[in-house]
Image (tube, rainbow, N blue to C red; front, side, top):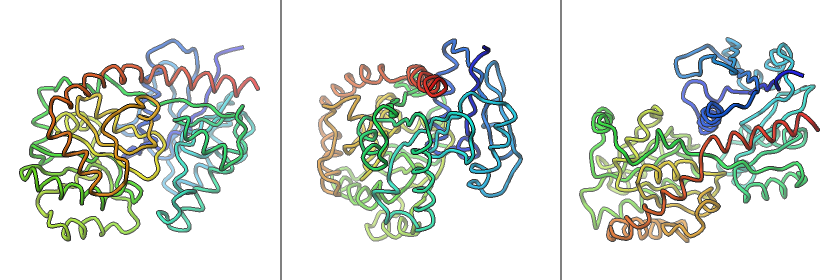
Length: 375
């Protein structure tokens, strides 16, 4: 028998890569670090672009040159392309799997926000996500989650037997994200129009990540540290996008809050390193990669519970107990006020981050793919 052949639905890496696209990119970098002996076939909906991986070694790319509906492409059209390579197993990294697969499959379900926070989604989007995730959880031979907490939620909500579930924690690319600043860091910040000192809010702007409370917390911080600014990184995907500017105006924060929108991967580490701290709080998350990237860059981060950091560092001190502006501000001010404690915590962060890497994640994923293919 030849090498195992894996078909991967890779459309989330196209254009401005989503969080799932970054997840898949991390796994590919991890695979490149060891001899796995597997033939990988990545399927994209659109056209080749400089941001997508070039074919190399065991990785092959396939482009559908399709500019229609992502759902239609993923559910129906890509199935034909998959048949052309006769994969041993298909991997869906983004909650869903193509319809009509005739081979074993593995799906990753990162979170269940569309189930637990229905008010954050328009009706059509909410039900699209629900139906695709529920079907994928039912048909996949292996269902992967990022944390033990999310694994339990998927089991309870979708009735997935424990013997079909697996936890594959995400990794941190410590070559890209490290405390050692590059000579170009200051130029990156200048090109983005970012001035120090600032607090960074990384990640797509979503209702569940409490942008109103974060802005309120920042307003409280500025009463004690008037020179500090706020930088938000990530596309605005709230249902009512104009609310963000309205809240900034209501809080009197015009001119001191900069929303950069989506930024290139290469700009993330300089933004983390230049910040006084990051803030990443949410009512519901799967793993939460930005907090770990921030810590890897030597920058403390205010977090809520329910993230991958819970598993990696249960005693992490800069957590908020309540998701309100006052609680978030209190932890942020504590970081700014006690540099000795901040330095101590960041010294511990290096040990925690060292245990999270994409090679380990990719090895665990390969084990799940092989298990699915042999069932």
